Length: 513
Image (cartoon, rainbow, N blue to C red; front, side, top):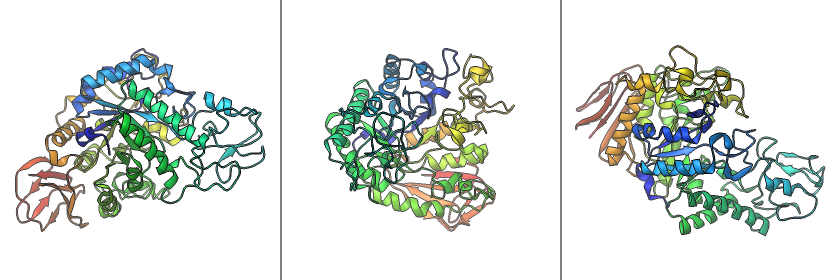
């Protein structure tokens, strides 16, 4: 773990096309992010994760990169992004860019060259079989679209040919080992891209699908880990304060592969999904036993059984990062009401690791049922424009309604920053209070200890962070635990009674020092 500044960091994730539009074209831009930096700082967030902003045909919302060293014109120009870095740094805010190392757009110049029949330096930049009707093993593939006799592997959509980092154990002549010069060249090309942005002021990268680079990897992902350890070595030598967060959702592997942080993603049925998105498991019945749903039968142990093992295994080598949500998931407001979100966020922002707040979650923006946009499909509804005020397009853009990247929430009670700033009891101001508490109390920050005190289903969930005792009762019933808790209440939602017995009223949260 290299980046020392992560200890007291809270990230704010920005989907740039939906954040704030300054030129009236209906699409958010870099200048819009710059204009809202003071707002972001006022939340208590001191770092940004900006979703893909490189040049792209946007078949997958920018996760299909056409040119890694050029920004998409719809957001501005490279100099605008450099200025964003500088303005953020003036305010003590770090900036991570979204790096997509596993594939490019089919329009990338590397792929145009790789498709040619004659051998060139990019022939093996992507994974190709050696015959036009030969599959690329068990990988998704496509053929018949180039003069080259072969099929090429895909990572996701048809537009995303897989970059070639090699196979852990090649079994076909066209499968290259990870130390083949052409696979090493792919690795060096990614290093070159990282150097470019770090030299211009970027503070690191969130890495898309970080665990999927080497094909036919083993269960421990030995090959992919070797690639990232090599990249980490470069960063440690040249950019020791650069941070990397993995989209891997396997912290024991990701953190040992050189990442500072790994997301605990809400995969259906995993521990994190049981907190706010348990409905993923019950797609047909829609039964929802999320822990933070007040009228559910949720059990925190469904989360702890997985989390505690990961935490104990990784606490000395990096951070587990939990998110309110991200651009690929339903927003938590999909099933939780604002009073439920307050308790959920209180938990998330007092846990170890480095938390991430998705734009709009601080005001409880809704997930909207929308038709797909730029390959978003079911994810589209979590990518709608930020809701700033009661004005035109909820303050997102002065453009005409039909020009907006996505529709705004047209409900009469759509939450806005403006309205919630005027309400001292709003979700927005609760988030500000929680993040101020986290920054103020060192024992709530990333490195401080974590110990479960009580996780009985019929009692409050009680845990310690250093010398602080924290208790959570998200249910609609009063809960008590035979635990002696004494001290000063330094933060609370709802009400708690201390002493020889700890009692929390329904939907209550307390921090005792």
